[in-house]
Amino acid sequence: MLTLERVGFAYPGQEPVLREISLSLRAGEKLGLVGDNGSGKTTLLHLIMGLLRPDEGRVILFGRPMLAEADFAPLRGRIGLLFQDADDQLFCPTVLEDVAFGPLNQGKSREQAEKIARRTLERLGIGALAERVAHQLSGGEKKMAALAAVLAMEPAVLLLDEPTTGLDFHTRQRLLELLAGLDLAMLLISHEYDFLAEVTKQVLVLRDGHIVTEAAAPHTHVHVHPAGTHPHRHQP
Ligand SMILES: Nc1ncnc2c1ncn2[C@@H]1O[C@H](COP(=O)(O)OP(=O)(O)O)[C@@H](O)[C@H]1O
Ligand SMILES: [Mg+2]
Image 1 (cartoon, rainbow, N blue to C red):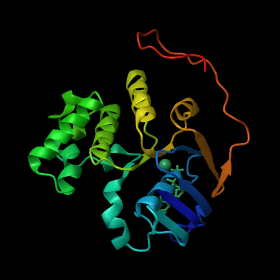
Image 2: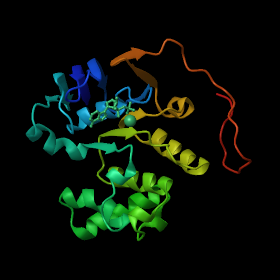
Image 3: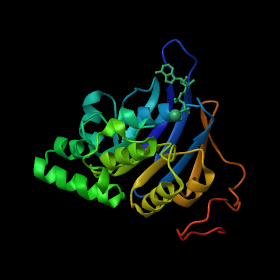
Image 4: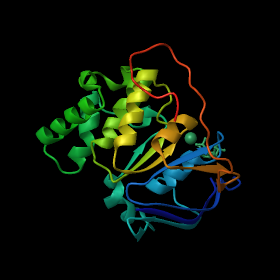
């Protein structure tokens, strides 16, 4: 689905952020990605989307090397990126329009696109936000609305840049169950190891511009939260 071959990248006039990054993501595979602030995680996703171009190496999507914008353009709908900042994703007057935007762009009629948008919002448990003004939503609501906008395009690969930031406990659990249940290839950036452990099968670490394999296997701690009615496990 997605392969990076020895990808190197530096922002103009700066030291390289990424050096010789190689990784591959197969159909249905879910990988986690962790790394300190500024280690280049977001940059990596932007290279995969073609928002940035590598200085070295290649990005290969669905078996095709991505050399120019013309290569990326037809594939963008098949790769969904949830931006780190939801404000980068939501730009229409209402949530419904934002979520319908992708399907409309993919050639669906307005009626079809709105139907898909409503269905996607319902699936994420935020149907009630459809007519709301996107920029007035809370941080967590925006995150979920942005995710709806991404999923409405039915991508084959999902790139998620810190999706749990700003989410309350229940929304986070809902997101966790949704992502764990999605049969999609996924690259998930998060600082929350428990979330990564529940959703992904392997976690990569970005450090000093390189992908390093985690030396120690993740181990479980009991988590603490307010009393609630949501059924979940405290032990593996
Ligand atoms: N547009 C940009 N121009 C110049 N430097 C940038 C830009 N975006 C990010 N950087 C720098 O590149 C490094 C990696 O950033 P980023 O990929 O956002 O890291 P992360 O997502 O892991 O926190 C940081 O040092 C950051 O300051
Ligand atoms: Mg980032």
